[in-house]
Image 1 (tube, rainbow, N blue to C red):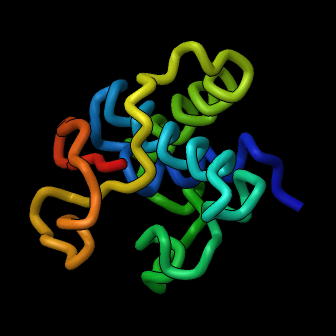
Image 2 (tube, one colour):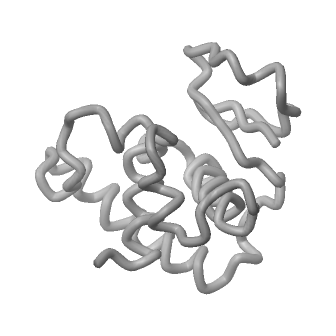
Length: 127
């Protein structure tokens, strides 16, 4: 069974490993905000693995960061540390209230139903 820290790190890695520190934190925040929102599952791992919520969980590619090129392994090491920090010290979260995000190069049908709260790197965040 995966720990909350591992599930959070995987989501941050596959969704935002090429983003800034703030972008990585904001992806983690969406994940953690969903845990406490009654519309979503109650644990980090359940939120991450909820059917078709995060594209990397159903893209057919490896979900093991250790099987990726060297530069990605460095990002993986960093993101595991960051995930631990955010779970232990949530005061480092940005507090946007965001529950959703998407990459700037897509236009999901659902964006009109939510309030845009931030843009960071290549992601747009909503609540």
